[in-house]
Length: 324
Image 1: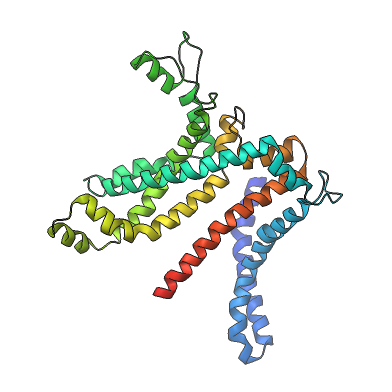
Image 2: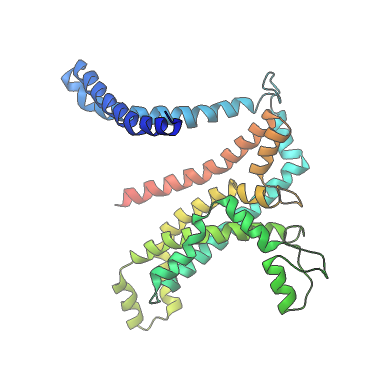
């Protein structure tokens, strides 16, 4: 029998069978419990598979990574805080931290700012759905594919040779200036990579912010305009304050995305020419240098950088729920 057909049969038949078996087993367990305990036990029994998956694939790897971060490169001896000392003293890792800060500031600012601008402008055109679809399409492309596409866009040849990169061909043809080494020049290469990330994520920000914009009562906007408020005053006094919770959610997503940036950098420069980011450095420490202790320490630092953002977001959600 074809292995692919066997796999398909297992998925089609096995998954429903496991689900039905778990339902039957759950009901059998509930019957063994006293009647007064069944209402409390039933939700936990239904949550048990999800909690097990969460523990096996998230909690346990996180705890194991923390343990490995205090061990040597072979994970056989304890080195204390030596791996963390390396992270905050080594020139390469410090450079990756600096570049991650650039990603955090500019990716978040550009994606959220452009997404908000496009959401407001697209809301006023006849072909709103088409315009939003065109902006959102890049997010449907994998990050690796986007990196390959933009490598061709940024491709550079020495002056005097035919330019195969789209941007350099346009620059040399239209302005007569020399070609620009977008991915090699240290002053601009990080921003060139961030532009790729912003190109992909602006559509996501636009969709979420557009949904928030649609939730604003149009009567408020019309009343302000009738009272003589200009469009800038309407935006600053009504739209922006009401959109702040949505902007906070989108910004949180972008901050986390910036902190874990990897694919675009790996495909386009592999961290060369001073474009290293922490996730790419972690990959090199683990797979290129076989130093699991240092790689785990970098992973823990990334985790600690994300935790305050998540806590602030959770606290904001709790405050919103308390007001309802």
